[in-house]
Amino acid sequence: MRRILVVGGGYAGFYTAWKLEKKLRREEAEVVVVDPRPYMTYQPFLPEVVAGSVEARHAAVSLRRNLRRTKIVSGMVTGISHADRKVTIRPAQGPDYTMTYDVIAVTAGAVTRTFDVPGVADRAIGMKHVEEAVAIRDRLFTAYDEAAGLEPGPERRKLLTITFVGGGFSGVEGFAELQSLAKSLLKKYPELSESDLAFHLVEATGRILPEVSDKPGEWVVKMLERRGAQVHLNTTMTSAEDGHVVLSDGSEFDSELIVWTAGNAATRLLRNHTDLPHNERGLVQVRADLRIGTDAEVMTDAWAAGDDAAVPDLASSKPGAYTVPNAQNAVRQGKRLAKNLVRSLRGREPKDYVHHSLGAIATLGLGTGIFQYRGIVIKGLLAWLMHRGYHVLAVPTWDRKVRVFSVWLVSFFYGRDIVSLASVQSPREAFETEAKARTLSVSRPG
Ligand SMILES: Cc1cc2nc3c(=O)[nH]c(=O)nc-3n(C[C@H](O)[C@H](O)[C@H](O)COP(=O)(O)OP(=O)(O)OC[C@H]3O[C@@H](n4cnc5c(N)ncnc54)[C@H](O)[C@@H]3O)c2cc1C
Image 1: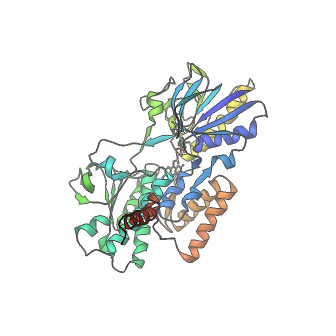
Image 2: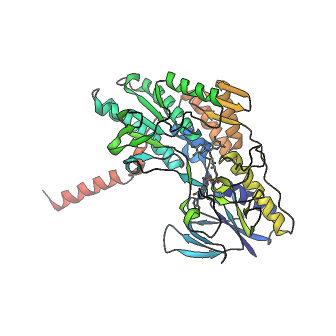
Image 3: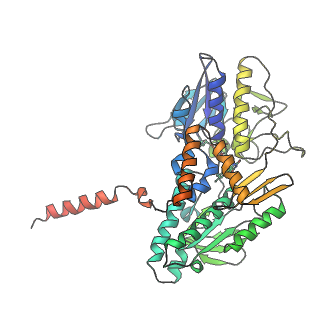
């Protein structure tokens, strides 16, 4: 039986495999998904995981539970040799091994783009994965607990100073959600006041939220500033050593929590370890029908979709434009890829991927959002309700929809959960301390 190997079970990979399961006849081909994570992350929920409005587990969609006819392989693909039709897989345990395939679908997404800013690698955290979102939330709660026990002063100020670098969609959503959570938390911490909090959003260009037009973008900046944030436009971070932030606009401050959301970069796998064609940004070069290659030359049995692929945008009037790396495209490209792959297995021509944007929608903290579709702009509560409505319907599987909705419903009556479980990062600490103390008292009897 032919083997279709899907590299990465995120948005595009999950939908590719899901659709393949529906379309393929039994015995027509075996589908294998390789991913180091056993779940697809519903990234649009991460800002709400940060804010404690969505349970971390509910933003993760299990591959094994939902891809029942697919073989799930836990591991990282570290090399692709399409000429030999084989990949190298690095499992969590044991040595690397190779796996052969007949057809490959590359859907490995992107990684957070970092720059060589001193201190960033040691101090900052990204916001692409569930564990990062949980850690950001827990760090805020822990900072509150610690700050409440301190006298006003630089140490307390540092704990309560939060910096986000990158004013794209995920950065602004995460920033606004965390700011809204931080302000609402003050009610539970009478030792702290609003003047103790400092929120900095640093953006290298002259505007935030590139997906919406200038006016709505300006409205969001003003709204964040009204809530007490400092938005540094046309500014970069030059240093963050030991949490001391230096910005190119001359500002300097200490910040305990630095979240890095300054864009996407191609994975190292695709930049350096494949024989697949890629562009200058490291993205796999695909045709509009999602086969890897160019109009002039097509690679057989090789497909790609999602954030790791440069897909020609046939819906754009700009010549040479590529589709925007977002979930809207990743989902639809995954489905198109599966349909096209099945068509080509059956000797039919694949169809081009064309998608006209449905607009952009963002959550900006409890009760506030923004939506734009061409000239139509909706702000505030209605946009926020639309955001929740859209995403609860869009998250795959009824199981996830119902769980997410139930948490929202419970929070409506009882508020968000504000417990920090930062100690899950070191779960053996209490047990270890007790065991060590006992060993000491036994070795020193009397
Ligand atoms: C915080 C945040 C909020 C967002 N909000 C929105 C939104 O509201 N609307 C919207 O449209 N988009 C949103 N996006 C963007 C959207 O989530 C991404 O565009 C989408 O996830 C891309 O899908 P993908 O399948 O290409 O990549 P991913 O979903 O990132 O999946 C890639 C998968 O590949 C795996 N992988 C990586 N390397 C390897 C390897 N070498 N071997 C095997 N597996 C590998 C990864 O573990 C991962 O599971 C948001 C993104 C973030 C970070």
